[in-house]
Length: 159
Image (cartoon, rainbow, N blue to C red; front, side):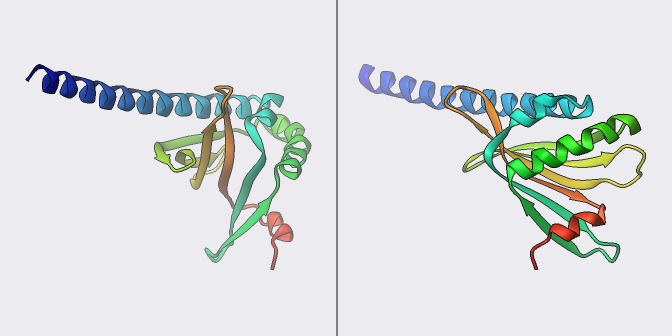
């Protein structure tokens, strides 16, 4: 009887500690996302280091008729575009505001879903990031999708 009770206690402890690790990682992922938002909205160069070198970057262009067109790019190209746009964004005091933020465990990390509202706009656009905890303990964005109404991204779409 004592062995059975010991096994039950061990099992409950293992399950409980696993759930705590899940909750801790989920909170860390959310904290990383908030750090990303603060860095991006303050035009910090630290944003460039928040992406995995081989991250999947998707800009989903919302055409005026509502059609969605995915435009994919690689991390290096995206960071170059980010650097070029940083000065103009700072001059315009451009910021993104996020709402309806959800964190969900997925096979390769944590997915953060949210609605993004560009400054000065009344509409909100869908966005998500998949964050992955690295062996070093650091978090990186391994996939990102942001909807945009900026039609110039369409010139990069692969037909």
